[in-house]
Length: 398
Image (cartoon, rainbow, N blue to C red):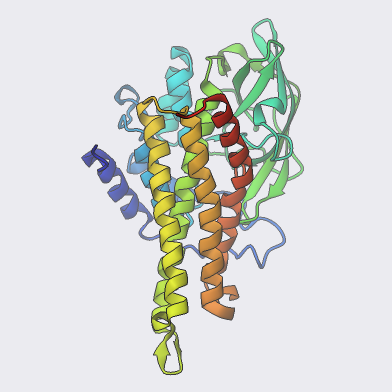
């Protein structure tokens, strides 16, 4: 078996490193020093650079101006973005766009794909459900009414809700099916212009009829939105009804989150190694102490396990290859390792840095906040262990 990346995948990662090279992790106020969000909007300048480098259209087909790459290429780029804590909706936008291309109607693809691939239309996904712990597709109900769908429910912690032209909202129909509705939090339909990226505006919430967005703040200090739908109407042409669309989108989101965890963990371990190499006690760098070396080695093993399970999950999504378990099993294993691993990496880093790790003028505390956000995003390790157990029960091995 060949586990090497293709030239195209490596080229995407190299392009990402070039774009992210000048990004400063401390470019916005520290979440430890602000009572609200660290910034009102995402990094628009960086977003434009990603668009110029064709990194927003990686998964799009060539007919829409994309590179026609896969989930592995996306995860390589996300890994690089996390190393510098890039404040852009790259994961949510790319996953939503890929889902529209894969499962949406030809008419919907023609209206959205090219614009979104150029970054003119920003997409996000409501994937946290009502509380962040319940299935997202059960938090909103959808019923057909002529040429429209009527949505009712609440989705919490929607990333970049105030910057998105459209938010992909999973919902449950009366026939117990999952559909994906493209909701405009700022009052625009799928045809509306989102070139400015403006979402709902104020933290108190606004939007189209029946749609309001209330401000929330994440652990990492980013601005989130609670999306409330009260008899909100969405045109039938803006609803993806294909079987498996939500499951595929959620698996891609979870796998992308694992790539973010890997990028954060790798940068944190590198920071820790550099610090331990120059910090001296008793006349010697602490990196030469056995206790320090052993802890760092354990975290290195965590990162390699995170990496192996990540690529297994991304490969299953990209290839559609069959396995002993459905692809959801590999995704669950990857998220378990990502959640547990990134937590252990940042905890060890804080321990080995001593008090210096809590200094708000040093970037480690910001990585720690991002790691905690990523650990619990789309379900912590316990949630995915339970999901893996259900899969094993339904598909006995051996």
